[in-house]
Length: 114
Length: 108
Image 1 (tube, rainbow over the protein chains, first blue to last red):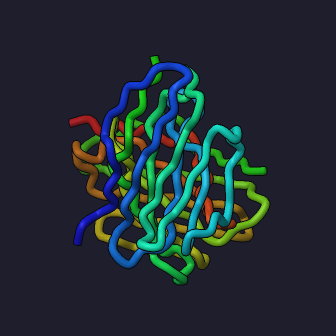
Image 2 (image 1 turned 90 degrees about the horizontal axis):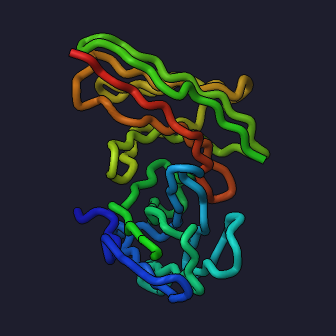
């Protein structure tokens, strides 16, 4: 069974640009969440989606947004990129309605803003 | 708010046992995850505890005490490949809250 797939794996963008990252969850997983990982702040929660609805959002500025499609695939968008947005962006998917007994991460997208 | 404490670093010898403690104070709680993360890689799921007690999975075991806000991860028969960062992550309100992680170094 395929794992969580994130694309692209690596990305270099310029300050002020915008970027869209994609996440395909494990088949049958309907919950998708996003995290940002940086050396200074560690892993921080961005948002979580289930059945196309955002159920929780972390403390990030409005430049960070996301959505989920009917097939459970999710995208996150960062507009007006800043140097501090350089990070590893991780997506995790989990089983539906079972209290999150497992949550698996994708390999991540490493974003570099120059 | 969330407050999650783990030791920063631990060193142990191949074949030994290491216990990584995690204490947490969270505004809500639905369970606790442990992840392993090798440098430059994504976190790998190790265990999930929702009830008090010990969960065993091969060489790894995880314990939870909800009333004490305490968990530990026990790594037995350490191997060189176990050198990694171990992350304690309480779960609540559809999100994982991560501590800074414990870097475990296994020496030959």
